[in-house]
Amino acid sequence: MAKVKNKIPKKGKKTRKAIPWTAADEDRLIANVRNNTENLKKAFKQTSLELQRTPAAISSHWYTSTSIKTNHVLFFKMSGERILINRSRGKGKQSQIPLYKKILALLGLCY
Figure 1: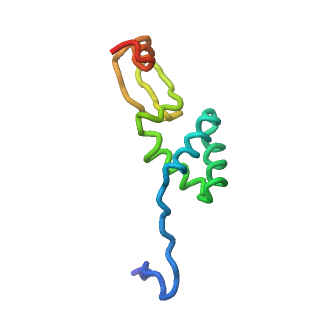
Figure 2: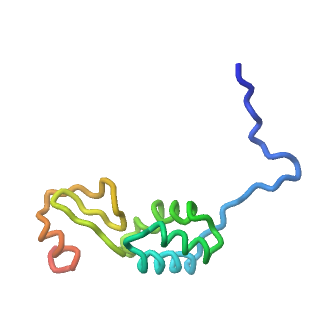
Figure 3: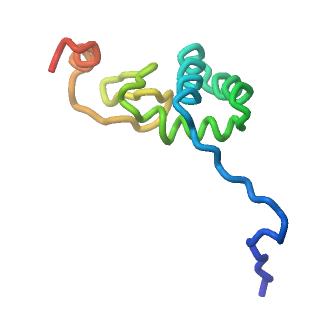
């Protein structure tokens, strides 16, 4: 039987705590993504240097929080089957609506 290691930190050893995101941090991330919509990895790297966070932390925050907010549509991809908002790959939203109606809806010309 394998020995299970104790996950409790040793006395005196500090554990790393997540630093909360501020509105200024969000704005910096959005600005970098807006400037690098074709290369999100580059945007995350640039943001990580500016905010003193890891690129993985930036990426995680983008995909779990910032990119799903509807008031931050920076880029999108569309096809006849789905629409991807702030995503370059994935399932996106499935729809039976014709492509031209999707475009009109995004432009606010159709409801």
